Image (cartoon, rainbow, N blue to C red; front, top):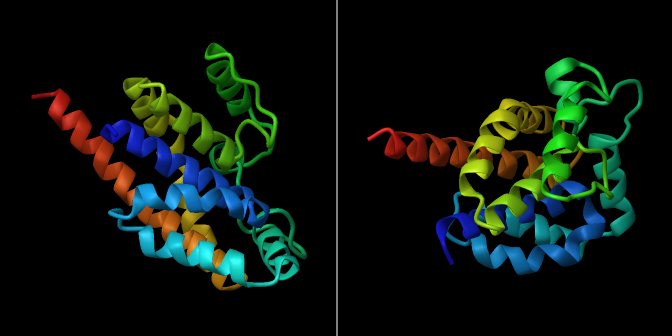
Length: 188
């Protein structure tokens, strides 16, 4: 597996993690690909929690962190919220244009939902559009997902969402380093 195909698996794994507990069965397959990553232990613990704890409790914890919470949602998983402080911001048009360029139609979530962007990034790397993948990560993912990870770490509702925040932060650090290294190798 090439480095970028491996990166594709990382993004797919996080797409499923960020979609919520109902996607737990999809995680196990992708854990194999991240064993050497700095966030492996956290993603493995997330999976273990998902298969061993009460689903209703986990859904409540996920909903409180990402969907709605009393008074104020602390971790809205939408790029337009972090970039423009609104839902359905103009960033959606840019994202939809990117998705449609490759014949992709968003179905599970809004175009700027973190899991949608992760899945699109996974697609780009999987079909060996590595330059496009790196550009998307730089212009979208790294602009706002580290802030989301920090918000999750500051506002988690239990061990499950705490681990999501920690794993996501480590993934974003790893990606920032990988992209920086790729850019410096290109400039040589």
